[in-house]
Image (cartoon, rainbow, N blue to C red):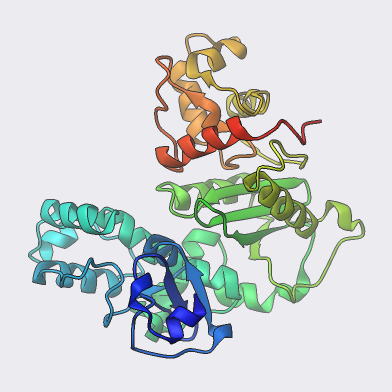
Length: 363
C-alpha cells in the first residue's frame, strides 16, 4: 500500500485510503499532493474509518467523492463542520447558514454513506480520540474553532482535560481506567479497563458512543480518572495480573483470536456496573453461547420478567462492553436481526462469523 501511495497508483483508488499523521489528512492512493515518510502513514480500508480516527479528507484528491465535485451547498456544509468541532450542529444551525437539513442529509447519506450528523460526530469524536491515541493536546490550527473549544469538547467526552491527563500520568493510581484504541476488521473500537476488569468496548462510530463514555464516567464515579493507555505511563500495580493494562493486553490478544476464528469466547474479568436490572440482563447475556441466539422475549423470560421485553431491549442497548457481553446474539421474535448499537451489518457479520467458528475459550 505504501508503494502504491508513493508511486501514486490510481488503480487502487477506492481500495484503501492513506492517512498522514503529520498533517491529519487522508488521501486516495493516487493523490499527488505529497510523498510522506513510511512512519508517518497509516492505512484504512474506508474513509469512514479514517474519519473516526481523527483525520480529515484531502481537499485535492477528495477521497469521499466518486470522481465528482460536490455541489456548492455541500461545500458550505463541510466548511460548517470543520469550523464547529467544539459543539454539536443541529438542523437549526444548517438553516441559519441557509442550508436545507433534509437536502444536506440526503446528499451525505447517498454520497458518503453517513448522515450529516454522523459525519460531524465522526469528526468531533475523532479529534478527541487523536488525543487518546497520542496523549497530547491538539492546537487550534488543527481544526477546532478555538483551543479552549477543543479542551471543552474533550473534557465533556472523557471527564478530564488533555493538559491534566498529560501532567498527571506520573501519578497513576488504582482508581484509574485506561483506554486503548483497537483496530478490528469491523472498524476501530475503544477499549477501557480498570483494576476490576474490562469496563468498556465499543465501536467508535456508534451513535451513542459519547453517551456511553459519559455513562461509564458516571458509573466509575468522580474518584476515577479516564486516561489513554500510553507506552510511557508508569506501572502502579503491586499485582500486574490484575492491572488495567494487563487486562487490555489480554483483551487485545483474545479479540485478535476471536476475529481470526481461533477463539469463540473470552476468558476476561468484566466490570459492568449498572442498575440492578441492567446487571441482571447483562449477566444473562453472557450465558448465550457462541453460535446461538435468543429473542428479547426469551431473555425477559430467562430473568423471570416476561412482561419486561422493552426494558430488556433498553438494557441490551445500554451495554457498554460489545462482543464480550454479547448483546448482538439477541434478535427479534420473528427471527429478524432488529437493532444493534454497532449497526445491523456488524450484528449480521458477528453472528455469521460465530456460526463458522469452533467453540473454544469458554470456561
